[in-house]
Length: 431
Ligand code: ATP
Ligand code: MG
Image (cartoon, rainbow, N blue to C red; front, side, top):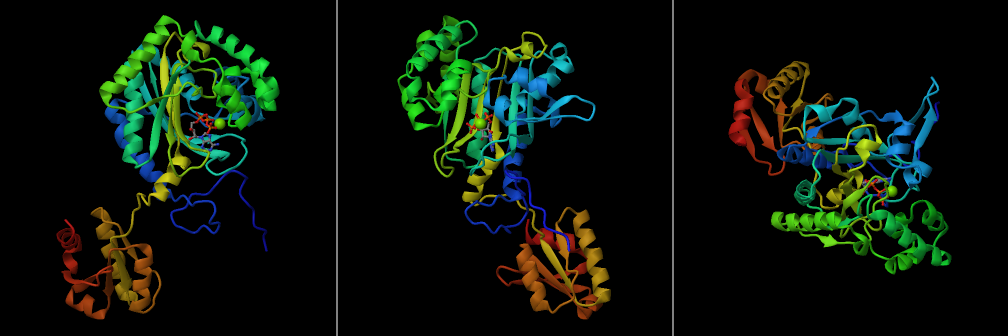
């Protein structure tokens, strides 16, 4: 007898049905993920975003340089190893660095002035496990390259807002500005001085961050650090005129597009590459402390940092599992259920059922046949469990007459139909 092999910590299976035994961890079904993906797939192209796919494996240097050595992601969370040929590689912890690498690699800048891409796929971070935080998780994200904003910023935030609304997610949109390479250094210094003076009240991580990445302290979840952060100098006072104008332009554009938003000076985001606009969609219920469902921002220096030209960009990434937890709580999912379940009673009927099911599938109608021989009562139970709308029992009489009864499982209503045109009959029954 073989021994059961358990999954890697922080990873999870997503199955089509509800088979989970641990009730404390809400179950995500594939239908929840499909609903979220489908909504994105339909909406994003309306704004000109096209799908791009990049590899899960990248050179470690891409993230060290793109995201920044001092960030939590690169310093502590990446899955990094030496490949068999000696190359240092990492499983991607996020999507933006990869998409920008592809943008530079394929000289996209020379082919089109503006580029809008979206992506979906697994990301990997060795984080402490908790509800809504996994070591393999899925992000759906977008990047708009080429425009300095702020109108494209507002357009993108409005798109995120529309997507989350379509999914029925309860959330607030928070926005902030981080300034740029001109005005942020002065802010960083002022913040650092303030944090050094309060270092005794900070957690150990934040004492380190004070020296390496002081802005990140504002984002710490530790209550002591939050208290220190509340009294910290605000970016607002340090903004240079162009950054101030950008932020005012963003807020005006959001107003024109009708996007309700909250200005949140503590919203800083964890990655090094952000400049000016940052934003987050924060769920107002249903997620506990892991409530940020999507985060985004402008990264005007990243393309250059990764070897490309001076191309500004802005993007967001949303955590699909966190969204799925909310979609699951709201009881929404995209599921394909058989419309008709065939229950043949003998070998000849089985062959006919197989042929009828094929005919339906060719017509785009989902159908299932029973592979087990049992009495009609049990067959009905199976049809019900599959979520079929109709069941059709095929016996000797039906084969001889060429007519059968489509039984509606919910109501018990029966419709006599001609087996020679089942697709037509079904279309008439449910237009
Ligand atoms: P957090 O503060 O929650 O750690 P982050 O700033 O690290 O978030 P980003 O890197 O901006 O997150 O990723 C964007 C989104 O991806 C997050 O808002 C979240 O919804 C999701 N996400 C990030 N890390 C995880 C994870 N380990 N498990 C599940 N979802 C995640
Ligand atoms: Mg994180």
